[in-house]
Length: 364
Image 1 (cartoon, rainbow, N blue to C red):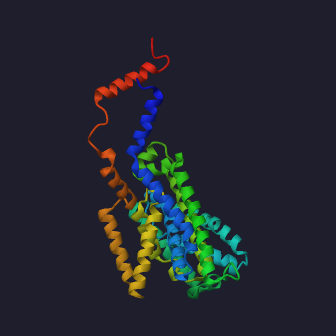
Image 2: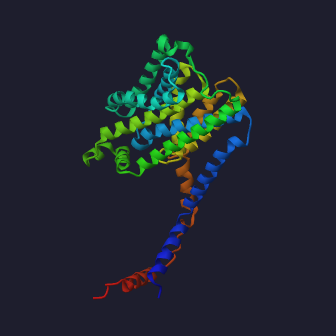
Image 3: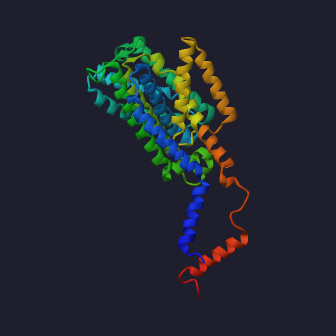
């Protein structure tokens, strides 16, 4: 007769056999992480390194957006407002206030987070299409302000800030910021992961599934949404601050572009808004696609058409995103989908009786 340890070991191995996608997913994460860390050392081409920085910026932006969209289900098309605020806050602190670049970068998420509190209090009183309209209106207001307030923002000409690291070549500059963006992305993913596994995260996901029912069950829905909104603004502004330091030349039309907000939504939806690495996967796909179409079709707007078609494909064929779709394939064709039982009902009953018989105190 098999003892408890044998039965427990059997259960563990059965669990491993039933979850090959977990091992595959972990392997893919490790491979991608190693590649991301090694990539800057394998090339000295400025274009490739700058493309890597852009994709990491997209990944950080999409992850920042996902604090709000992924947890609560509220779709913001105007999240470029916090990207632009991050860019201009960092630039103004350096150029006008004359702070050091690292202090300006550290203060930027704090300042933008405080600005996001009253904006969130106003915007989160509405839902659905009304919320989308409010977010778009905010980014348009900031665009007009940035173009009109010449003494502070530089107006339509924008602001230029010096490189934070003197004496570096263009390639070295890209390489340094590549690793800075990696560190910021890891921080954002860690915070998202912690929230996802916390009681607070459970409340946010309850809001996403049914906000009225969550409120009836005692979840402080408004304050939960506001906290998620502020976290989202904080990490989106961090991406903006890093972009300002990396690129150095700010243009209000680009910094406060609704198109940038649409990219964030597309990247998060493409990878999967309920997944930790969903926005990162979406950023890689969208970033590479945009760079490819820009290289192929030059200054034309064909990349916008291609982006729209990509969004349509995602909504029609992968509404939950790439990661859930791939996981579904594993579930469908993996060993756990087999209809052949590993043991009959009689064998299962006998095994349970054996466990009861060997448990201390089971005999009367």
